Image 1: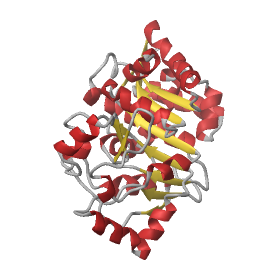
Image 2: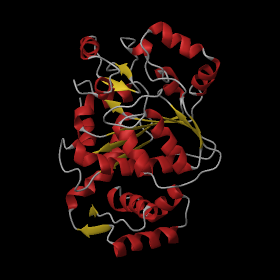
Image 3: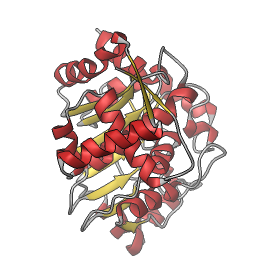
Length: 326
């Protein structure tokens, strides 16, 4: 089934929730019973929500067999890479390779749905920063859960592309009705000595220690092109990025350089960054990676290789590219 999203101003958060249910049913091919279990509602409620989607015009259904492959992409990626679950954002918004700007809103909505699926009562959730995570946080409907903590993974920083890093964590916490623990330090400082001084401060040391005991991480991964966010946000110089590429860096995960095996690469400016470590992030039992754009293929594969991913949200071009890799 081919589905086309259509947004209205009325309904607000309820329409966002209806859209997420429609994406699962029409886009991912889940049954009504499976959706009911994911959202912890009755099957009858799912039936009513899908009928409301059609009545409101949130979805329009046309016959198009080409998109029936989307759900098999998910299963094939799980089998290929040993992942627990893969959510493929597919539809008219993601018809071909490239088109990140066009695909990102759909990926963000699917990621918002995935968070509600994966998060559980009692979880401590670490939230990263960047365009993809900011879009996902904004797309999340309000869905309060009990006994949830949300932690900021990267110290305070803003950029021309994205609001301050703490905003992502705060927005996710607000949507989940969770306690939010922000990181009371800059994302990057001018010297290594100053970074060490910040980390030794009792308040910041306690906050960083909390990041070593996460249940769920929510992050994206960037490529190492000249316009990668680490550079445009002023955290790394073009020269430093070039050096990292020469040394084998293929991706940037939570402001950390990673090689093709997902290993941390302690190159400039890594020692000046105040954020969760790669080792911290690997210990979380649920690790959600949200990625949009086939230009992040190598970076996504590296994160998977490095055990930084248990659950994956990708657009259809990237999903197909991951399956095609040798």
